[in-house]
Image 1 (cartoon, protein in one colour):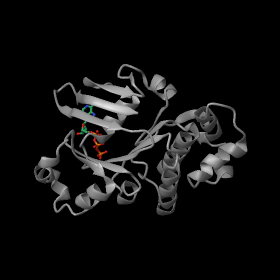
Image 2 (cartoon, helix red, strand yellow; image 1 turned 90 degrees about the vertical axis):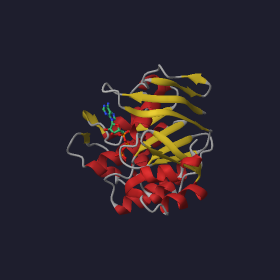
Image 3 (cartoon, protein in one colour; image 1 turned 60 degrees about the horizontal axis):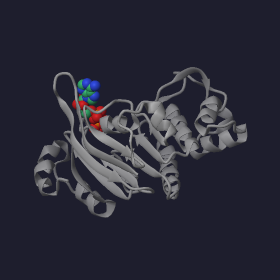
Length: 245
Ligand SMILES: Nc1ncnc2c1ncn2[C@@H]1O[C@H](COP(=O)(O)OP(=O)(O)OP(=O)(O)O)[C@@H](O)[C@H]1O
């Protein structure tokens, strides 16, 4: 479904944020990307969704080279992206954005269903404006509801847990489990949360712009959890060097 070929990203001062990243995700798979702060995870998610263009490399989606397509064109092809810090749109209501995401006029009851999926009481939110009066956790949950409504073939979430309270977090895990039951769609989640990593089929760990380990959750998660020096993951890089893919 999705293939990244030698994806690299450099900024003006010649800092290489991503270094020849390669991976493939099959249809129906749930991949979690984790790793220390600044490792390049969000940059990679933004490159897949089309927010930024890679300096080198190719992105193939369902057999088509989408490297030069815009974020809108990629969305039309079935790629949805939930930002780490969602954008607010003044003048647009929650009901509007869910309708836009669903791609058709849906009833208020149907829109409410998507809000309850993310633990929001529809009557309190459906007519609210997407302004800065919504808290960080509320806007994040509304964005997740729009991604569910879009029903895309590839959904990408960047730290969906950020700013979300414990009760809603438990609910969110169930939302991801449910999304994963759709074997025609794939999910990429960037997360630092063990419980989210535990829902994934596979885990990718990124350090310093490079994938240092990728594998089935059952083998990678215990390895990451028993890392003795997570605060200094370059040591992990050395330990795991033999496994670089
Ligand atoms: N456009 C840019 N210009 C300069 N530096 C950038 C740019 N985009 C990203 N960076 C830097 O690249 C590195 C990787 O950033 P990125 O946000 O991808 O990391 P991350 O793994 O998602 O981190 P976190 O876990 O903290 O969210 C960081 O050091 C960041 O400051």
